Length: 302
Image 1 (tube, rainbow, N blue to C red):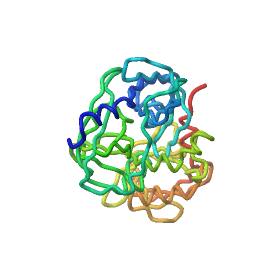
Image 2 (tube, one colour; image 1 turned 45 degrees about the vertical axis):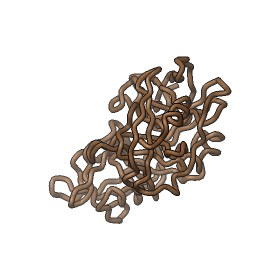
Image 3 (cartoon, rainbow, N blue to C red; image 1 turned 90 degrees about the vertical axis):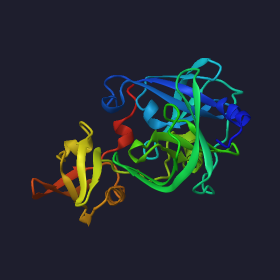
Image 4 (cartoon, helix red, strand yellow; image 1 turned 180 degrees about the vertical axis):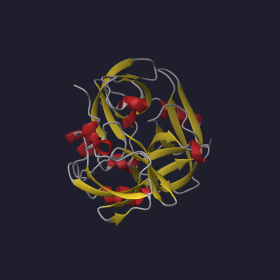
């Protein structure tokens, strides 16, 4: 790794361990469980911590452990269900922090390193190269116009920082991409910076149009996009979409890829009626679906 030991130590002082407990009744527990561990980064001395949303989604309690072992309760300040980010706050000031920077000037082949927590006092580092900067599409109705893929695996639980060897935090490590080798995906720093003011004021990005959500797990096929799974009691399941359906069109637009499906879907908002055509048992069927609101579906249980 090209970064100096002193630089890594300095960056590690801002990395925290996150432990979240989620009520068993929350809809996210079927996939993510009711106890979650994550990594976060202190991005402001006043106690703001940036992480990924899946770690804290639905959490009843969130405990944050700092490098020297002190543990403190955290509250959710903002959640972005489209980008996958979450912002936490602890009642503590004077914390070691790092600013979030844009990744826009990065190029493939640049050296980077990722930091992660594996426990309240355990931190790890992994170095690598940026191997890809571009669009990332995933099966859970997720699309990043720009993503950062690093040749090193995430060294800890999700949500940790990605740094350049100059010490700039340019991304939030989301997950390992084991299906394409030993590498990890990071959400670019500008995704946070562009929405920071709205996160702090409103708890979400209000200037971005709300997106309709189906609650389907969409996988690409040569002949289109197949529904490989459904969120139980999600809008798609309630509207009659079934596992194995191949989605042919949405509002009369052909959707041969995941990207086409998502972009067509996101022209609609929650509560709007959507016309789907699906192939089921070699028969073309038309379904009228009501778009859901992912943030409302996965809201915290009072």
